[in-house]
Length: 584
Image 1 (cartoon, helix red, strand yellow):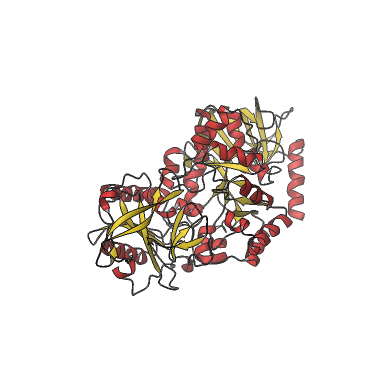
Image 2 (cartoon, helix red, strand yellow; image 1 turned 120 degrees about the vertical axis):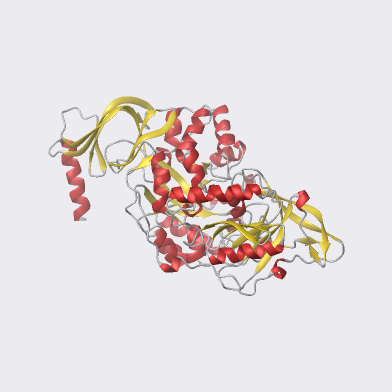
């Protein structure tokens, strides 16, 4: 306790003017998130903490920073994000999100946990010397669908309890409805562990009707990031579930939701922002949480209210408003300076009183160092062959269940389609954009392969594959022929994970992601360049998707309606069971 006591005492002395402070940022227009007023002033900072706002006396500080009349707002917060799906390490990610004003991430690292368990999760979130803050939403469902998928790691009740005791843990991570509506003991115990520690429980309330939502809320879930329509957002608010307005790469929900909020004059105090899953290229081009704020303003939301959603609302939700979310004494000095409150392009970003980014550039680039066990996670069966991808059927045609994709959403719908059968195998229909979809177990446990069909990718030939496939992260492949699909799986094993595009027996492009098969060790700019090149290759293969690999990574998810595909088979998400691909 001596060090925290000394820090507090020094902050009080600096606030009282008994010792010089470390930094004075003056000539500001300060945005007050409590009164929703803007006033001219200055911020006095000692160590990492704001110790005075507009001190009414002449103050001393080791350094003075001229705010040049800019607007000062608190650092932005992403209330739910999977770092792994940015494809970057936390160190590389800093160069992309911090210049956009994001100073705090609430991270559910369930992706690395599904691959490498608690050991991998701790390695990923172990760096405390980043230019942004990381708080942990302890993964609640590793695996996501026990008995319906193969994963590399498992987090049971004991592991979750251990993680909840970590100083950076603020919540139990997203819990899907199936666990609650079926009263599954393991997950109810995880909820109780979080609540006994005074921590909230994050939700994933997709596809619920009013009565189901009541049961879900009664379990003690606190929020939900799966609202697609305004009515869904409104229902969640009515039941005390705070809606997280999500804007990711394939989950574009903000326009629909905020338009409804504005049109209906809905209070915004209990609304939050998140990205959930957003590729690095999209962040670099349009922004991070800054984009959510900007787009909300353009849709008619008051700028101060939009800033509050990204700051004090988030801090209050996670019970951190004594530390974060406002530019007031005693709070950490995470500050964003804007030249125009309607143009969310940060001129300067401070974390804990230290300048970490200016004019869109990080002050200091970082590089992560990850152990060997995180770099060798992809083992495909040595016996993998084209016959493993066959969907067997008799006769000349077969009726099959097909996964149909919605544009800009991760939800899908099923349909029944008739496909031709050749030599006892159902074959794709490229002309109708009904392609084969397969998942290959990649942990070296059972060599299982399951195949089905999907509509929406638009490939005219070849195959694309990814070792990022939520939440099990086996290898998921969509293709027009089995030969190229086998080659794509082998290519990902060779580079220990990533994205690959194959056509006519040739690898046309690959992005290696060797850290857990999920992330690249390269800097952000290098990864962006490789993704752009690979997306162009896929476009030349016939796909019009803006983010084909992000769409591919979600099509196998067994918790997002209506259908998912894992290495064990086609999943009816709402009934939580394996169903046949070929119908009688």
